[in-house]
Image (tube, rainbow, N blue to C red; front, side, top):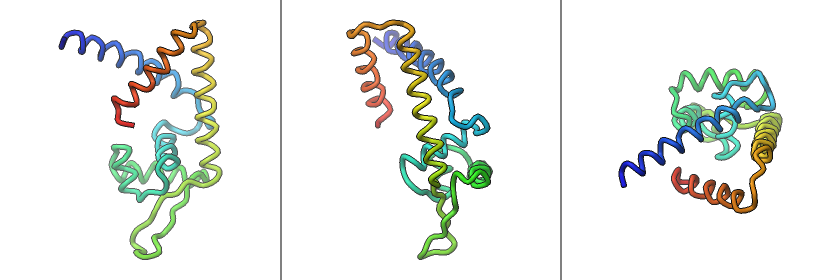
Length: 143
């Protein structure tokens, strides 16, 4: 059983890695790094965060996230908003332009994946398996 589980894990890891690599190249703004897009995506999904919480969420150091956020702020994709109760605390918030970049990137990536799936001409049963696999992957990662 352990060998079967390890083989499955290895095959799945490789397939997800290859898929992720192809999809990461599709973005609405070519000048944005993967880290910048990830930060924008986290802000879109979870709302405004402090810099330290955003760094924790993205599993990077606070100085690294500060650099990421500075670049995004320069592009007008995020703003820093002081906490009304504690002026020492500052939140990072997505701007309307940042929201548009995230939405456009998601749309382009969905279109690219649909195109990849369409190129292999899957039947309805195989498409159902992909939908089931997506649900199982969400279960594995806890979302």
